[in-house]
Image (cartoon, rainbow, N blue to C red; front, side, top):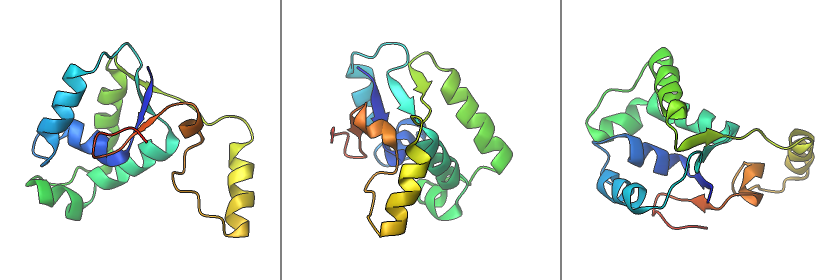
Amino acid sequence: MKKLLDINTWIALTLEQHPHHSAARKWHEEGDLSPGDLVFCLPTEIGFLRLITQKAVMNRCGVEPLSNFQAIEYLGTLLAAPVVSRVDEPTGVHSLWLQLADTGVCIKRGCAAQSIFPIVNQDLRRS
């Protein structure tokens, strides 16, 4: 079953020095994952790239932030893994998002793919 991982879950899963890496790894290894089951969408890609290039985030894990170039390469490596896939936003989502943003409605999770896939957050629970 496809799962849209929260940005923090991606970081915990892929960064060995992260305090929750063991739990994320255990969840990954014990999951019955098929090719393409772990999903990135544009907002999770943007957030992931932003966070792994930030000193405040990476230094908490005892590592240096990646450069933009390194972060893009790292994301490419993740996307090349058989279990990882990427989905585009459905047609019309961008204009709908702008309409909702204009009304002041808060979109809790900024990815339309959440209506298609369960989201796995940093506590490794589905929401």
